[in-house]
Amino acid sequence: SLIADNILLSKTDDAWTVRRRELSKIASKIRRRIEILQNPKNCKEAKKILCNLNKGILIFR
Image (tube, rainbow, N blue to C red; front, side):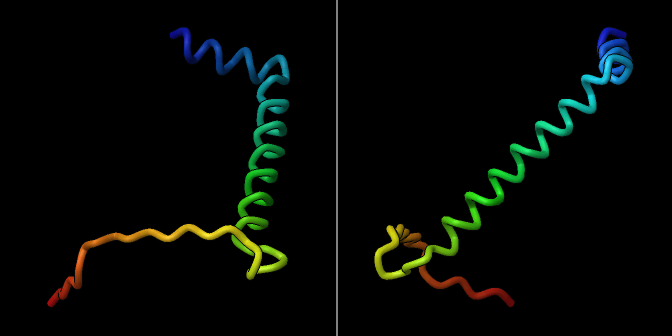
């Protein structure tokens, strides 16, 4: 199939390794940015989001 051929070619021409390396870099940047957003240096000056879920209290038995 075309998909299988594409996978084989990408592994043969080293594109697979390059893609994995680039995806790893992007994932690291995303994780770092989330870390910064979740742990600000100054909590008092950090922007905050307030969400009103308006669901009431749910009791499960």
